[in-house]
Length: 135
Image (cartoon, rainbow, N blue to C red):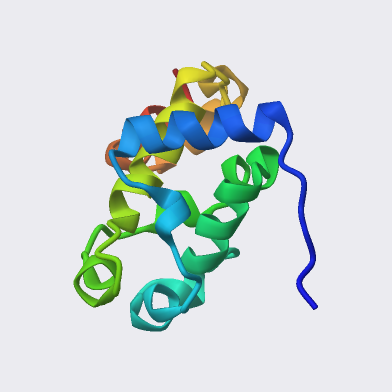
């Protein structure tokens, strides 16, 4: 017996926003799991690619946007090549990253890092952290 899930207005708006940004019809995902089984980065993810798709459809915005999986996607396109619906999950991950970045939430404050640690850290690491974790 199938369970009917009621989608809220906020969930539908989130789904529409991600579909608009990514250019992908996320609701055409059939949850076959091929994307997850072909992803070389899945062992590093807290949410598998197929979970990201279903959670996006269900509007579970907070859980997805707080996950590290959207940042770990290597955009290798294994998922797109093997998807029976030819969905590009790399585009979906990029759209989700854009939503996070557009909230202008800083997750790191460079002034909070002790000066002795800054002198020890590679500059490229500091720059990358600021690009990824600040706006």
